[in-house]
Image (cartoon, rainbow, N blue to C red; front, side):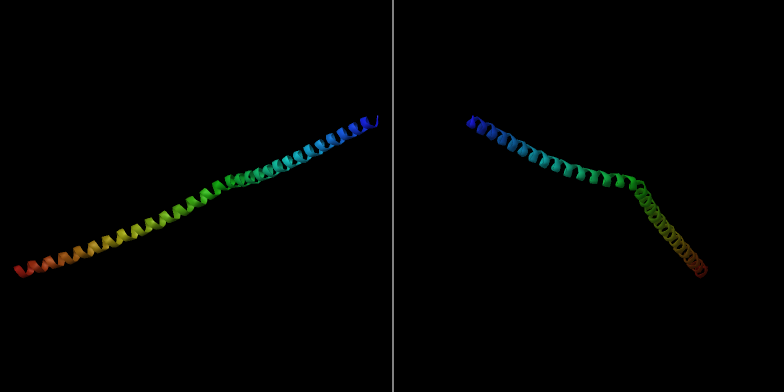
Length: 106
């Protein structure tokens, strides 16, 4: 009977050790899963915030683009005006010179 009790106690310890080992492995797995879930939650939150900011960012980008285009258009208009003024000056000088030539030839 004593040997039977020892066998039963040995099996109980073995079962308890196996149970503790499984619990430890399960806790480790649960911790890893929790870390993954936390990381996912963080990334999902960052993504959601980025998506929410997108219209604002796009609107700001469009405003910057429009300001730059207006600036460039104003510069183009200024240069066109300067070119036209220079052309007008050259035409005026050219007409004066041609009058003088006519006057000297007659």
